[in-house]
Length: 312
Image 1 (cartoon, helix red, strand yellow):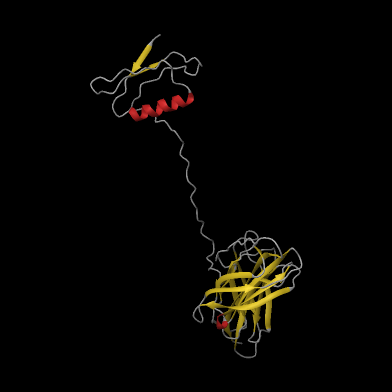
Image 2 (cartoon, helix red, strand yellow):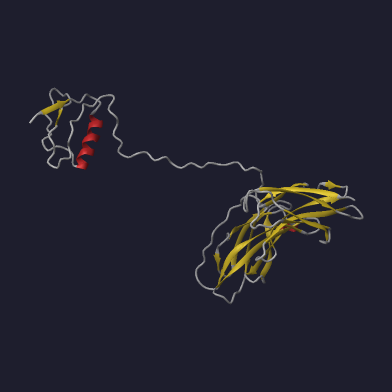
């Protein structure tokens, strides 16, 4: 039997230990591997046999470890995922009125504990409404913003309800109002599940981007000439145009039209632009509203508006 020795220089003991550990785990360490006792404190030479192992797993000679010897990878590195933020094609603000708890899809029992953020609203008051799956108004009430007048803030409230079913789909809605005439300023609505029995499952929501926002005209802008140009951005939940309306101080419709969002697909951010003609007898404050409806949902699911001074 030929034994071909190779020596280990100082600084290579860790690499050799890893090699021997790996070989021992795989059963490839020859039984006749021997190591002579160290002489004068020097690192010992390690002798490795080139004779095949009885299980025929060792078939080749080991080369001496050198600077060029590749390191043994015990566990390959796995790159950690990193978030890639894609800039939006159009900058949209945060939601003006947001229901944060319960979030969409939550399973709730009596009474519903509501938390949210938004405003401003007339007298710091916001309205909560609950609709059943057949469109009936189940419950409504008011709560208040925890903020200085004219500023946004948190709001909390309870929404009682009764249902004769074990469970049914419901629609939870929150409204804010303009500070001058109390007209609807903003509205947000989404689906939840109403339970008469069973366990609640509350999904929290976040205050995300505004689904529909008006860029022009701005709040308190002065407009004249018989035409108002309305532009903005957002996305829709169905393949249907947005509604646009012009309301006087009593909430009566002066003019109305529709406009489609120019976006790649439903649910994708896009822009809209429409010219709305009007005819009024005297200058007055009016509210421009843009909203979305869905056929199987009672009322409007999202409403945003601005107040402007309109002249003939």
